[in-house]
Length: 172
Image (cartoon, rainbow, N blue to C red):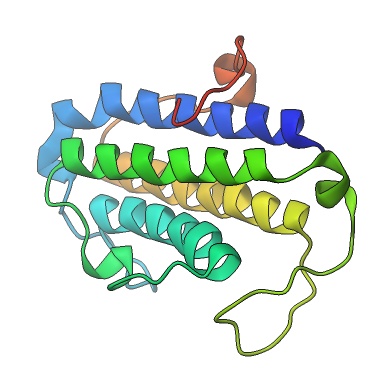
């Protein structure tokens, strides 16, 4: 994978968030409604906050050693608009970090030295970016399931419908 590939995947993710922005404001009564799960992220707001927080930790804390006052999940925005704005700000930091990497660094399988990680786990830059995107997809699926349980027909997040048609920019 190279920077262009990751830009496209991040842009697809940005398109998914924009689709959520078209969908969730009409159903904000579902925003903080708990649903049955074994996870502590048992509302749509908490799931989305966890997606944002994970990206912030990987890019900011673990890769750049930027201290966080507290994990995002412990300080989630109270409204959809504020949460979406936080996502865009953190995603802009991800795009900026990606631009600092070279394609050679992304294709190098040498493990990245991660700060604030007690055990080395042998991840390359490409592995970490892939993990961020895959983690988000996994939890987006949980959001879809929650919406369905609440009787809502969720948006279609299929890549073929949301594939970016223009080059990605910081924060979408």
